[in-house]
Image (cartoon, rainbow, N blue to C red; front, side):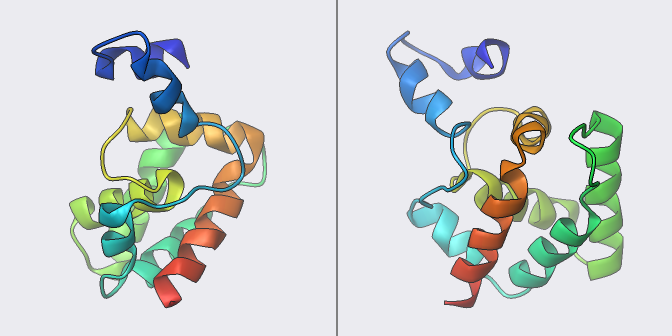
Length: 125
């Protein structure tokens, strides 16, 4: 986790806020995250990602990238749309640590599923 958040820190005290994104089954999206979740097509993107998640607790970088590629192709959207939607769904924000590495940590804990389910609910409201 330290390696993941360290590049984005200006001060050591910023670490608490940066690490917050990696703890807990739920997130509270910020204004930009909510705006992303309400865009047309985001609900389908997040549902496709959720359906593609492997059942095992390990999510390799290659597997994560393959899911993103497959969802991009299946949904007929640009990769950036999938990446932003996934970031908003997993972390509630459009800025933050490396998406793939953060996703791997969240997947190990099983929190990616619950966060994506919550994001899907937000996208429908």
